[in-house]
Image (cartoon, rainbow, N blue to C red; front, side, top):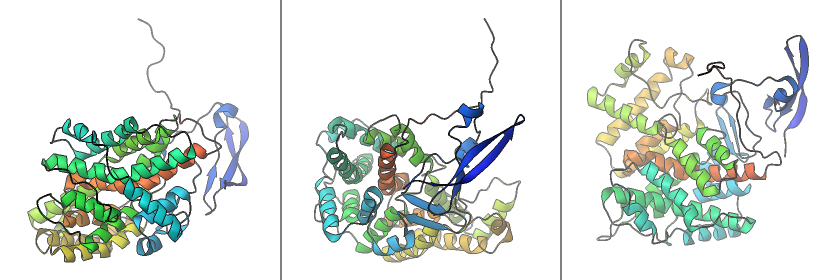
Length: 426
């Protein structure tokens, strides 16, 4: 469905008035349609960072940042986190509806049967330095999938490419980690569910048995659900922008992974762990750290609080708070990781009642507790963003498909206001 008409807005400039259509989405969001502004007036809009610019109409994800609402295809994130699995959510995002038992069994089986990589991928990894960060290795590996599988030109081929991408990403990510350690690759196991299979490929070794803890596997599945989509963020917009050139799916997703790598986007949970470890190494006092964070003459920064969209408590952080405590308890991490969780919970407690942070609407976001969970699982810090990308895959895919099927589809081409030198000559 498309946005409906909601009247007109009037723009006055240079003694003239023009009418611009106002459109309204299904949740009451309104926007001024400026698509004809330049052709009608010669003017463009200027919006650095696109904070007030709607780049598309989308039916994938709804966010109300003021009320702390997140829904995938209409379903509240709280319900999906409680009752669904990651692959069920992936099906929902990509195909628009939750699967029936038969549909899910078929989808789950297809993903399971496509987790194996072509053996030539071993040569790909062997060409990478072991010191390389896993994110560029993973981004390059996803792009390399296009060399093994042709660009889909039918609906059947597209759905097969989607399944391959979701299935093989977890194997690529685990192989990137194993390569950095110099350990042998662990092949996927068809008897395991998606999260358990990834954990087995990450932590098992050929010389001994490895049993995946179901509590840890469920926590990972939950993290993937919470990261599955988040509207038109930087990496999703990158996937759409690259895909708007008719670049293939694998290439577009690779670009999204690279965008996610940035410390202001997917790398934020790593910065949270670094902050908690800094507090732990100094004196363990969250209160003293927050006093420094409030001092405008101090460079100390509070990480994992506040969000570009949410101006209230991030609903994903609320879900992760309990899961974080469960994982730390399960892993028996009473030492360093237990201390990190205690520091994190104290930071949240203080900020939620301190006027300085309340007035600035700085509430915990999804990155605040996810890093502690990953660390308790034994996931190394440099793999945090790789895990984020694994969760975000279904959202990127859904957005890419939606864009390509949009009747208003066109290549992305923002305008600019030129501020350089005027004409000059040699």
